Image 1 (tube, rainbow, N blue to C red):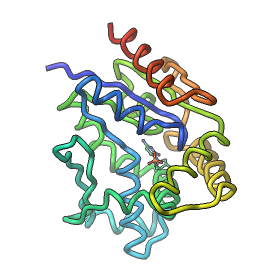
Image 2: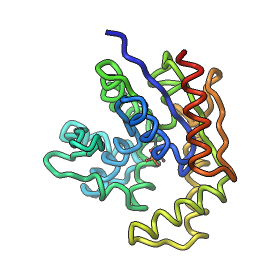
Image 3: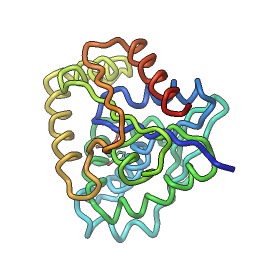
Image 4: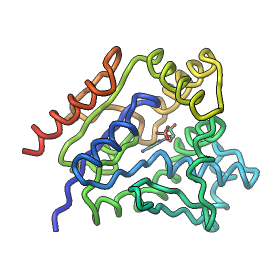
Length: 224
Ligand code: DC
């Protein structure tokens, strides 16, 4: 069977996961959040006292790591480190930082590639990340590059963290977003960039509902 794939890339806080999840539900596809995989490995590195940005410290850990993705009845992607459900823990700001550092290591990206591609070989997927349209699924049926200004993204993340009961002040969130953007775009291994054949959707000043309608329309046009 031919499986369909939709790649959604873009910087942190652009609304990728919310939009990709809603799109997957609408189309009856599986939503695959690849950032969660890097986050889980980042957590594993920190738990083991390793610097997530240092390949020499990360490499000896890889043979022992067991990362698994599983889908709950509600269709939500849960991440497991061994038997431990780390779905919530990996959302903490220190894990965002660890994921950004560990994901800059080319060997780490190669190590996690198979897991991502396998999902698309066995399901219709909406997959979000940084390099899905450029590296992981270059043959994706539709590619979207979703972005918004750093200030807008920081505002959204600030509200989200407050809602989770882990508030962080706006200036810190903005500085963190700018730092992560620079790291994700500036790295040599699969840097964040728009694929040549991706459709750009900028959600600055656009409501979630409007952005979703634009996304849905774009996907429907390209899949037709
Ligand atoms: O999407 P996110 O914020 O959960 O991603 C966490 C980090 O992982 C982010 O800094 C960039 C990295 N990442 C990546 O390099 N490639 C992906 N496909 C997904 C995430």
